[in-house]
Length: 440
Image (cartoon, rainbow, N blue to C red; front, side, top):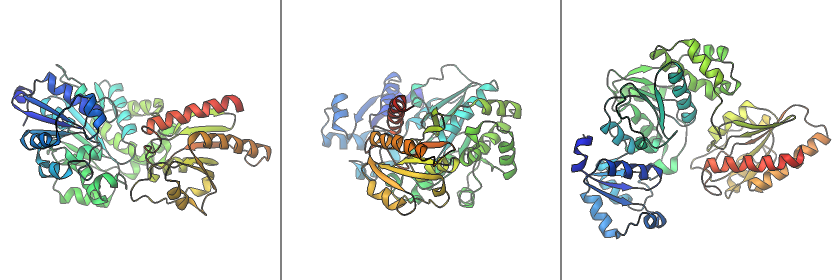
């Protein structure tokens, strides 16, 4: 076990110098770790950090260093030194491991799942805070966890969002409350196959003890795997009755989608475990406004609503938004994910027309051809231009009298044309607002 007092005796290789890696470097420097080596496969970042090591020197450091702190974006399946890192996989830890090992007195709620992690984390943090507890959201949802210092705090609850990437390498996280909200096909290019992805998610329960709590969905495969692995924590499984209670009592329309209701059953069970009253829970839920880029209704003009759902990087995520609305003009496309298939049966009736963007348009055309009317528009700017023309024609022909929903829900990753999903969503909002000024 690593503690702050013995960090000075340990050497670390920080592999990957994005925001997580940078926070780890700063933490290790402040903790006066014995030696800190840096590496990134990207030569631009190596130059930025003035890394002069040659490859032969790096190989030596991988062998000799005590711990390899690997950034979550790096997969052992496709990184530059995959064979060498795989041989020394026992040394690999994460920034969240390091936090757990160097901070002993805090309570933790750790959340993972394929879709809805950030929204669930945000709601949990607000419910805990509004009930009088001190709760901080960290991990994927906020700043890197090593940027946060507990100081002398003893009663703080850390609400931590963890991805499958982080869980794959984590060895020391031991959440008091571990929540697995759902698992569907995603990140297969990173994990290699669905089995590896599934097993990575289950690692959230690995280090829990009998005094800890696990929250898992009504999914036989997950329940059976939990029991088969012999995890020690007490299980909470949401009931249909709890979902009914939530559906009847929630007044916030944003939270009434199928996926949000499902995820809120975990929140409800957690709140019960913390002895938080229903009144406090539903008061917080009523005021919750949602996070940017997640079914974000950012503009409403007359009977046209514009929704930014850029965070929907898989069809399973996009489907939830498409199920929630009718008369949809759908912007779809980007960098397709491994193993994706579009099950359009339950949503195609809601869609008037699709506009396909991105560099992998052939894949998206194949998925929706003969099921949904579509047009290739290559990029967001072209899409919005054509969409405003379509809306004008529909109004002239009096085809649609009800609300029209223009939705960016790409069902794909963003890296073919954008920095990330936030960049994609922000550009969409900017383009729409510019056109809206001219049109309305």
